[in-house]
Length: 291
Image 1: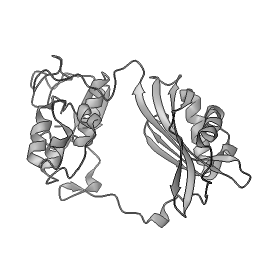
Image 2 (image 1 turned 90 degrees about the vertical axis):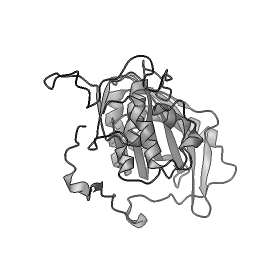
Image 3 (image 1 turned 180 degrees about the vertical axis):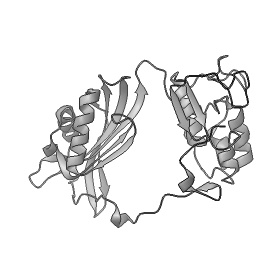
Image 4 (image 1 turned 90 degrees about the horizontal axis):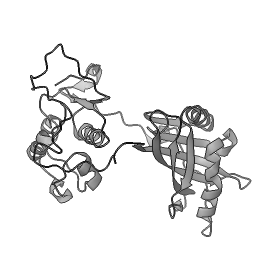
């Protein structure tokens, strides 16, 4: 197993420190003080605003605007708080990636209400990039609020990478033919495989740090789209992140796409509910992932 470097300051007694808790009042965000009427036409409002994403100006953003990007335009998880930061980041990344074809998802516009506190128009949309390498298909959400003049402003913008053009479906991995093979091909070798000399070099398109549930899920998705990858972890055995840390999954429901992504095509979601750690490790080990 490869060892992740640079974590010494975050390891205590063999485990990782939790992210320090932050009081809600200290977070750089606030709900809009808006109470929208019951008869607001959410589809019309969202449809009229969406084309502005092609050429947003700073005046299109609310003063307390946020933009949360999940790999769509920034290549990572990024949050930009405040109108000026969100606008500048959107302007720069849009210029590099060329997002086009902004399209409202039918029936996805609605008013989101927190009774007696706040409300806003929320709508889901899709788009694609034209100048990024590789080109991407993405989705997103716009959350709109009116200003004092009744003009709709962008309060919250979320963009999400959905897929890479020209690759397979990230949520559908080829079915397994047996417990240790899917299509007769392997993504690589495990650390225990000695067929490669230490001096040999092997190219991988992507390195995944951490062989827990999230890392293995990412590996499954990379395999689904045909991207070669290497998963590295400080533990010597696949599944040890569960074996050495948790008593059980403690998860009541697991989405079917998560199961597909982890190559667990023969296992029903109900079988994963409250699964004890040893059984979960037995599932992880034969997955055929690079460790």
